[in-house]
Length: 290
Image (cartoon, rainbow, N blue to C red; front, top):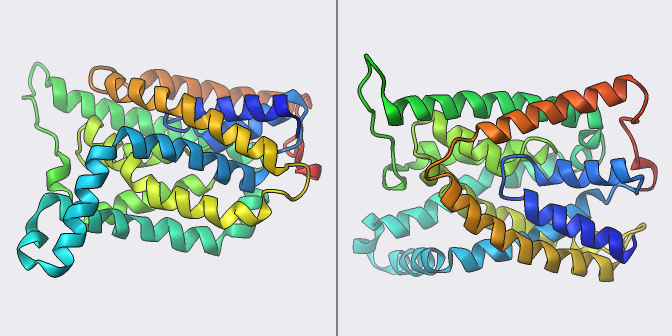
């Protein structure tokens, strides 16, 4: 991998990680369209450490408060009813599904799941689900002629059942094209949470999963055509760009709809099917050396 490729892929990772459009799919597609080798699951997982570092800094006050309350609740029973202490447990519980499924389907994640036809399908299907969830949220927030405004849930109402559902939604992102934020936010909206609450928990829930995945894949970073230098460079680029994107996205969702992302996902999925069907793009483009 050249330094230019690592710069572009790091930029793509930073731009797409927090948007509900799938960073892993866009890394795969960028390489395929450019005629580069597939960067692979290891490169994707490690560069995601950069974007998660952005989450750690952006939500540093929330994270410090949650960690502090969680540790105190281990020895102080009165702290166990504290919302931040409970959030610590809910992040742990919500991380179980992706941990179990990630290890179970590791070979599929690094192989068959990277087929561009599957990516096109997941882009369209999750896009439609996100669109439905967004419409339901908008209906509750605005009401209507014969419908009163319905108050949506905040993270203070998050329990073990919902935490696990969020976790299973996050685990769907093991398939490129689904999108970690897209799946968890869709799940949260369908369960009745506000856009901000669903996005905030989505980003907090991703921290242990992404960091664990990145560390696990470190051993494979120097294998094949991807070397350590470009991987680290891409990770730094992903961190810088990712921080700017997450700051913008958290402001965007407070007043805007997810429909632009829905339309983008569906159109991109259709475009992929057309290009593959016409023989312009191979469903396995770049895989041979990736």
